[in-house]
Image (cartoon, rainbow over all chains, first blue to last red; front, top):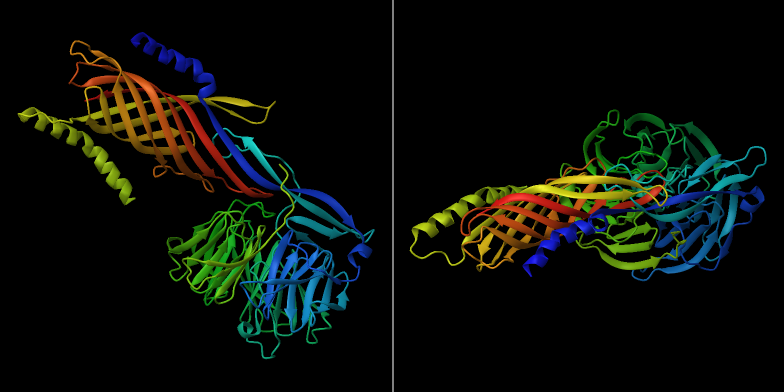
Length: 433
Length: 202
């Protein structure tokens, strides 16, 4: 017996080559882009109302008067009766080729359709009626990280289809030496964002606006619709909501992503920083200051004299920063960083002070108490994982959240334990392994 | 951090406890029924890693520093059990496994035998308290298994020198920074190493 024991070390040495090899596997999901071309005629087919369909690749969310609008990326808009949040009911699907953003004033829905802006009468959501189309107002844009632009010679739209690819690769168990598939191209970012309601804007008129998420590129204020593309702020005069007229165009820095109206100010999220515009003259916003940061994407929301900015990598911004910045904007001419908090991959966010909700992309949804701006990380109330979170809209009691997995609706009466009220699942495009 | 400091204090005091126990044992008429034991070892974790895709594999040998101490009791002439704390310094992860271990004397106990063969078995969970990751990275520890065999040189009942050879399996999960075009990026690590250690026991 004892002699046999002496063979144990020899046996272990014999097994060394196979047994003593580290096994490190990196799993990643990335976007693959394929060029596609659409003619103007294809894009400008009449906007129609179609029977309800399942969510496949949801983009931004928007809500107004108990109705919910969920963008189906580049396909159109799902209309959902959400007056009973426990049982939202899909009502119709508005087919709008090339749609990514939306805003609603009164009974008029504004939506982009690649290079055009369309205005739709949604008085009867089951029979939406186009009332106006503004042609060729948006020269370029991006959906989900894929850029599109108008071919000036042919008039066609050159776009990119996005597929999600899952890949597992053996690594050397170290940092920074992961496999790199050089897919090139552009990526990520279909954003959606929040339109200010009339009550928050202090507008003197009584228009009825909806509410958007933090990733929106459309915003309503006073008698104007504000839209941002990668480098410009384009205004539309909607004094007559059914007849949007082209307004001023204001050049901005490159990499503009989101717009958030707050009071008589506009907060613009860009890849290089947060821009603050004075909007006392709604016809011609003027830049007050910029809060610069690393080259990453940054939706922003505001409460009081604090701005909450999430910076994320993994998108067109190419940066490697993932964090929440809390910025003191008491002096709008000189915003100052109060503190940064590391995050995983933050996307949209929403604040219903003191409740701060941050979407962490593939890493779920986080609920914070933002009362103490210097200790937000220590006041994480709940982290819901195993879901994909892209953007949120807190509505006082219920939280609307959209992600690649579906649309979720939570009751956050108890912010430490969000209660799922309802979910509309996504039948999303398959991940290619 | 408080937990970490407490643990360090306990580790630092462990030899004192043991010495005190021995003093008490030697001064008492009745020896302790379950005397304290301590096994402290340092050594290397030998292994390699193969990365890259088939056809473009990169093979690298790896050697990591390891140290551990096991404090416990001798429950019988052959068997000692205790709690262990270790530190394993992998290339990009400094892990601190905590858990339980046993030392079983395979050879028949004899006062004339100065070399004893031991079977060792440790298991636990690695903490990441000592680790510091690069920006965007976050290491989480995982399960640890460490069976092996060892030799103890010394007279029974006195201090011994140890030489052990064991297989160590350590898992870890790593959050990695997301790069352009990616929406998710994580890494699952399994360190499979041959552990060669030297140490002392008393």
